[in-house]
Length: 255
Image: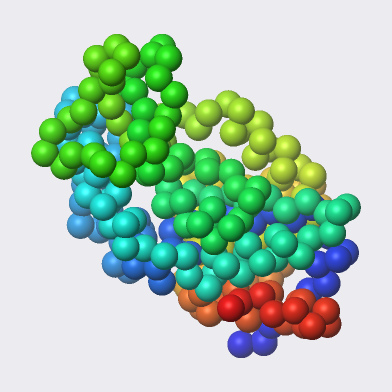
């Protein structure tokens, strides 16, 4: 695979969008595609706002089991590569990492400017929207019972965005601002099957950004939406791609 070296110094604002594919090498299953979780589990029964309303314990137990898997997951070379790229930014440059993932692995790899558009499985919050309880991290949660809020008594839930729920307005505004100002957009490990994230590349490109995709499978409409497409595993392609671009400075992105 031929990789075209890229001079990152030419780009004042860089946005990277990541999906579940970037965490596969960390031992976490993707939701779609080969080996995808939704191939075996009914998404309507476990991951929707309606399912939460009908059976909150069923939804809690499902995501609690996924949360258990995070105890054994570690950031991989792709996570570290993006963190290293951010650390190479000059003062006049801006780097934003938008992730659809809820695993928190980007932060553990020391990425700083991360927008978690779908929340984080490490956080728990109250189901009652008007409750004053702030989302908090808790590694001690039950798979056998549904915990309740110590302020209002309502059931607790994981602080993630389910299908049928809206992304927080402040997060939406932050994403729109970054897309409109970026002049380099990279999509990594995302199937582009879920909106609004699937449309981010078109927004960025409409504002003049160079667009690059890195994914293990071919991407639908890739030729019209991306200037460059690299097929392969994120943990292999991304470090190689970034090392090629930073080679002139003598830096190595991946450990």
